[in-house]
Image (cartoon, rainbow, N blue to C red; front, side, top):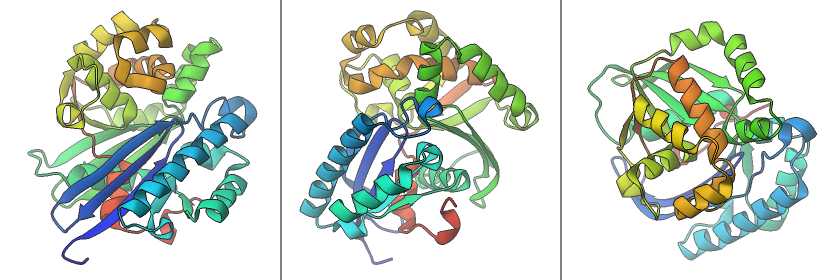
Amino acid sequence: MKTSEIRASIDIGSNSVLLLVAKVSAKSLDVLENLSEITSLGKDLDKNKEFNPESMALTKEALESFVQRCEALGVKASDVIVTATEASRVARNAKDFFQEIHKSLGLKINIISSDAEAYFSTKGILFEGNFESETMTIMDVGGASTELIRVNTKSLEIMESVSLPIGSVRSSNWLEDSLFVQNLQKVFLDHRLLLDKYQSRELYCVAGTVTSLAAMFLGLQEYDDKQVHGTTLKTEDVDGLFKKYSEATPEELLEKFPFLKKRSKTMRGGLHLMYHILHRLLVKEIKVSTYGLRYGTLIEGEIKKEFLYE
């Protein structure tokens, strides 16, 4: 790596599209731009097995604006590191859609494996500093999947990881169809032996659902990364949010927490998921990090072939 260089990464998730541009050196990140757009690419994916046209149009619009911002900061579209996760692994029309994006915008989109998600999320979290415990458990709650990762903080080695086929968008769709309880029970049953391995008093959590919950807990009206990063919530704090907002409509959540914007449509599902998984894993408290997958890819600087989903 040069002494420092400007890099850009985009994370295309099942709920949001995220841009990070930063001046990167071996020991620091100087963030120049950090943007998020809710495009709901994973909406109704379990029913239709494809991205819907409205979500694709919103995603393309977001990517176009991100490319313009990157170029203004000196990063060409062809140099942006772009990843896509669970929804893109599932959708039958993902590859055709991404080929169209590459042709029109110049972005090469890498659909990555669940193991790659675990790797990059871990790399992002561990970059920020020293940790007292030799091992830690990380949870990355996405729109269509949730990654659980156990990592050695001294060797920076991932000990094991699992990807659960449930996230805030899927949970929201299941709640709308009155299928949440039975589908969640099936996920927990199918992964019961693995889940026991991830029982932990403390979880380090990343991604939009968790950072939004932290902002709700803090009572923020406007989202602020600096206030959210490093927030500790006890499980009873999440229980309190669940009791208060588990049946709230998107409109009610938006009125109370304007920073949620379009994310208000999936926060109820995310809150239900967080409540149940924390109790399933016997968690006592969570530590919230705003450093997630796109930080990891930015630090890495490339997507190796072994990380691609086949």
